Image (cartoon, rainbow, N blue to C red):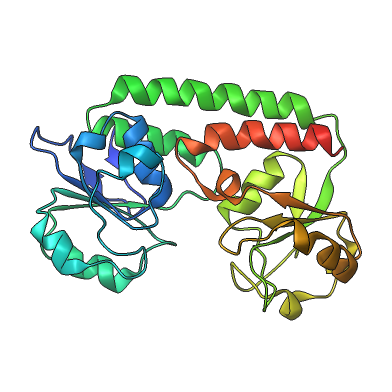
Length: 269
């Protein structure tokens, strides 16, 4: 992420210079592929992860380069990218290190709280020559953040169990971006403490029965309406479905995510 000065600094502290005209980007991060497209850079994308599915019509024209965890190194090599966009949580370190042997510029990201999106916008805007578009996104983000604050500031905070997987049941720890998004809306995720970022529920079961609400994500596990009664009975709290992309996709999607949370909290207060 950029520092407080004018450096274009990524999550590892690497300072990047603004890119040259001959820009060729491979993005292995779904939400950041969307951000790059929203910044007007779709024609500079020469490769993407197969999980990069938005904007749907635009990404159809961008070649797939494997998955987030199993990138196709030789296909990426053949695309001759100048820049590779990766994320500490979503991509495997050993693969990124292998790609760094021939990709000149590796841009590493790791947003942990909603406000980190402002740093992402500034980094990408400055690095890829889209400063005006990045400033506009930042203004939209600040407006959405203020809307969420106005919608939720007067509401009592609630404890929620956010389920992302089944068999085994899995949730998110409080040091994740997802949990920070919920916290911004007045929903504090359980468990209060965890040694891992995505714990199995049975391993941290003590205290989870005190949740005010159980939230079922639509990704990575595709929870549906049929799971609501089962989870409500299992955890002793009302259950509802949550659009997982709205909570876990940082970048430009965070603007819609904040407004989505404002609507949810207003409906479920």
